[in-house]
Image (cartoon, rainbow, N blue to C red; front, side, top):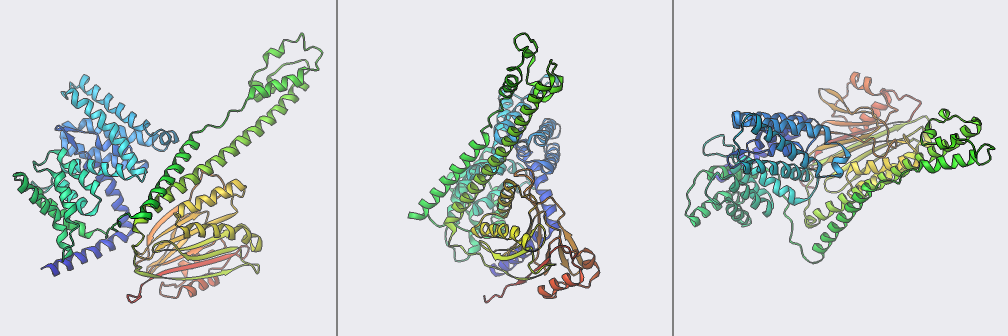
Length: 634
């Protein structure tokens, strides 16, 4: 029986992984996840009153996610609450508008309490209007509770979504359990119990305990669920001879609590049992080893360093640049123009000097207009230089803020991974790479690198220097080496690209290079393509070729104004990924040539350069990548 159950679970895991690799399934899953989260959180209630918990989640996201989440929560308030949910529908709509208009503003990021306070104000105003106009009978305590929930949920979910702190994520999990506990597709099956079963086996102890607290706050059962979740967490640590028995720990813990307390309620058992076995379909969670001696000290120091860098970034970002003293420039212009004038003691026009004269010097009337206008023109040039210098200093500061942010996140990630340093991910695929180059000169200006990263990551980088030949290579090689060093050290790809962008912007070398990077996960078969100014890439399948990526401005234009484009795909089914420099015009050739993904990558790259027709005026490079199942014996 257990063997057959294990077989079914393995089949379910394989099917889930296959579905997860499909880009269409991923897009639909994201759409359903955002809409469904708003829908489910709209069921949250305290004291039998609907709460603006979904509004807080909407305020934590921006763009189309906020729109989808708003629509889902509006539908949820209508289904779960009927006429009593009209106020909740207005909360969600107000939260969506707030997120769309203020979510991406820099002042909202610099002032974390701005959006939560505005959310509380909107809930208070909507509640007051319902009490005055529609004679809503909500008690005063419930009115103030909704205001507090709106502010707290907006702040909590923003912290949980945008930061790596574990505490906000734990508390957010409790809030989610509070809502899920009140969604029951069947009388004996609540989503809250299912989620609690998953949390008990797939999360940390604080997260599991707070999830139980959320169920207790929902008041859906008399059984103390906080105690149940705590006991279930410790039961899962028992080394059962059959590992699948541990997934019954939540159900066993609930039965034990019933015996100890004398309370009888069988409704939680089916959901906890189902949630426990659903946890077996999740990817294996890397258990952290116990902190001992220098390991724990090193982790604490890394976290402290990350916090210090984050605080320095915040303070540097909040520091305003000194203003330009236009009155001082105007005073100097006045002194130079009027100090040698014979009518300086009787002229009344001197009193009419104002800051406006720096911008509109021709509006000033004087007996000796030529001298005054010349001095004002000189002051205008000085003002222009001062503004340019201030803008340059602002770029330097933005680049420094960006690096502090990257280093802070990098050190925090190192601290998180330190207890798991003994874990080794197993590669399920091997990578085949072939690259060919051609150019009008002996030296090619394109630089192509392939190198391993941390974990099971492998990178293929194509850097195209501006121009051709040796001059282009002088630009491309240092940039490619910098990206390689950052990626090898464990920096995320977007951090490495933006560091190169900042460096080029500060040097005034906009468009000196283009960057094209493929990050391949050898354990999952997923690939992420990062492009900054690079030519589109292609994915070759048996049914044909598909273009991915679009043309975009090159790096170095601005420190913060532009960014890389990201495309995610799967290479598990034998697809071939082709990276091209802008000297290769392969679109028509790929659509006409009889190319299949079975040919060796080197041959494919050579055929592309030979038959696609390099433009001749620029260097051309083609890099071809393909995954193959890894040898089980290796």
